[in-house]
Length: 86
Image (cartoon, rainbow, N blue to C red; front, side, top):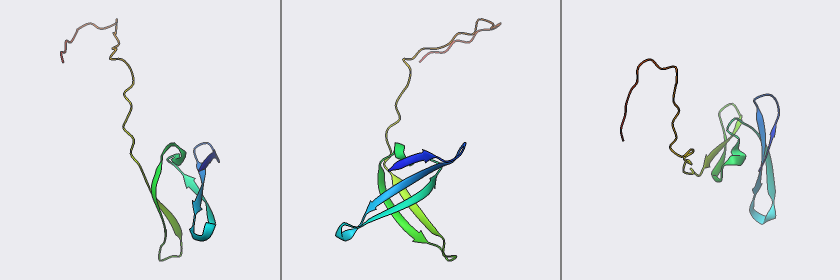
């Protein structure tokens, strides 16, 4: 999969699908999720009643990475303090 920026916010991705008998189908989609960051699980091409085509894509969910090392910030301009414990 290739993704490229087409404007300030829009991404355009190119999907290349392998079909039976060695054929390939190349689809350009407007991509608001940056699909190149995910692993595609399933893809279904559907047509609605107005003859518009859509790609219905599911992706594998990756566990969120925890960032930081448990550090906290201190506001030196505080007039009253609060204490918490874990």
